[in-house]
Length: 182
Image 1 (tube, rainbow, N blue to C red):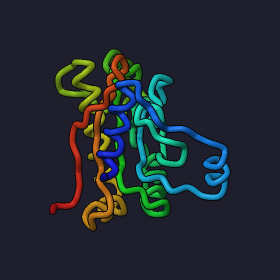
Image 2 (spheres, one colour; image 1 turned 90 degrees about the vertical axis):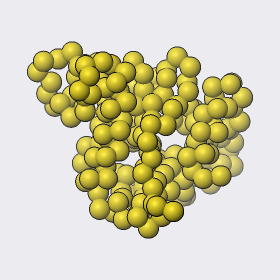
Image 3 (tube, rainbow, N blue to C red; image 1 turned 45 degrees about the horizontal axis):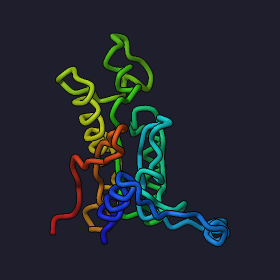
């Protein structure tokens, strides 16, 4: 099962309330000395978004970067480069979510400053359109700003995808995916 299929399978378990991920003491002891996540997730800092839970994964499986509006700042991109270059993750997911307060703030403010000015709003001034657009643009920004990540995609070692989690149902929907041509 490839990394994206693994996440989507876990999300299906979460949505149907058939989760299996546990964190027994022996796993915690093992994780105290190393980590080998298979995916990195850039998600919002929103308290309703928890990738380990939404994708039904044990601790150590996901390298999670959180920031309001899931904006790929330079620090976030450098963290993702660490996950790819040193931890060997095979997938990066830019994870937007419904009812995003950061995207709402960017839409409603005529003077968006700071982080909110970096949220990629849709040409259509609609919250759901902007949430999806922001996630897709986040993936594009990562590719545009990181030769390391782009090289990993071109060599077939990495895929980058974007998607949106519906807060009410928990379902994660893939929007797009960048990977090596087969």
